[in-house]
Length: 244
Ligand code: ADP
Image (cartoon, rainbow, N blue to C red; front, side, top):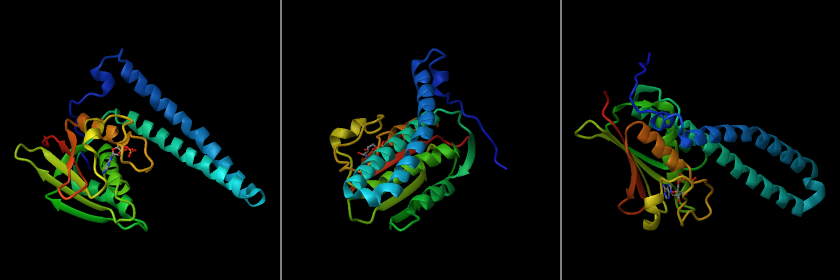
């Protein structure tokens, strides 16, 4: 059985008081993004029906228009999901001791399974952390997902994941890749909501993933950052405070 612990890291609405405009905006955003999902699903289903019923009769022009609508719908769905995740990062933390290796393993299984090959190296000593497992998994999902997404086209993505306990008991996790890297000019804003770097090269995205990661890590009392990976690519890292 898992023990639920509490750490005194308040949600945003508690830190800024009941009048906080930001807390209200986040709640509104959660509601709006949640409510958008159902009409989006309905539009997607109808577009799919149009595709099935008329593509053969109406030919290439029609198929291209449908494909463009479907791409737009996928972007809208992703944005609605990311906005929902952004708001969820403020939920009350459910803290419990969890083996970091298990959470990393779950995240890797999801990203590495399937037809696309990914080279993964794991090292370190994999401590137990006190964390909200669902939210921590979200951070790892984002960092691993980005390491794969931002690999140069036509290469096998390489990911190196490392976890250590520092001398003061802080746990440090690093997710490194051989991807396109973060341009120096973008670095100061990389964890800001909606910021996308100049070198995304048309890869899909909303610029919300790293902002969500920062919020989750900071609510756990940790820090997050990125360095160049010696030899090419990026080395994202985050810390979690000492297990108490
Ligand atoms: P998204 O990937 O949806 O655009 P994120 O918030 O996850 O949003 O990332 C913000 C930006 O940081 C991305 O648009 C991309 O330019 C850059 N980025 C994130 N992770 C990586 C990475 N591993 N390698 C290179 N660039 C990255």
